[in-house]
Image (cartoon, rainbow, N blue to C red; front, side):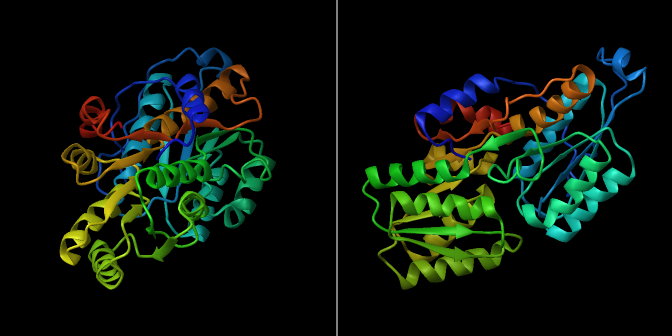
Length: 333
């Protein structure tokens, strides 16, 4: 979730300065989304009809990252009096089915991730044919426009990875193990490719992110076999925690950097067990995805001006963790 360059960081801060708390609505153990009947002012445009927006993601079971996405989306929905319908599946064909189901139910707008854009293209085109506004967020920055989507909210993953690689190189890193925890995700692959630009001696390893025990054992074996690995880059906070355990088990001196935050990873940054995190600010992604649809539906706005609205990368390390940790513990950062 790191922001990539000085320019991107400035754009992010300027483009999306929002801080709102909200109720989590997790389909994998969190609280169920609540609906608000608050009249946000858009009823004049909609003829008093309450808007319904579907949010469809590639969330995998147990990944705490998505709690922040849902928290942001629900905050915006509550503010605008929107009924939010959240659904998820980490299998591309099933995610496409969920998008199509949202189209068939005639929702007013759809916000979706595009981790596997080609697999979702047909369902996206179906939404467009039905004249249902659709925005992309979190993943698909290089593909949303070719699918006909006008707005995107998220991080430039290639730039984020490259910036992280440069930071590791500046810190003296020589060999990186980059851990891809979801097969076929273009965003995760872009992150590792970016890291490799900064550290050419970067090796990718594929793991099953839904099986943390397996992740730990795989990383421990790699660290035991190759003592030249001096940095491990994980692409999600739960995977970073597995890397910490693997490092200990392998008696490795490798340093750990990660993408994304959760409360445990934030505490590990404070303690020095994780050096830094690349934060794409998922709360803002969820909030802006819903908010932008509301603005388009009620006022004809088109945010972004044909360009992605960057929410990252933003780096979290020892220099700013004290400020950010309280928000991570509230599950909004």
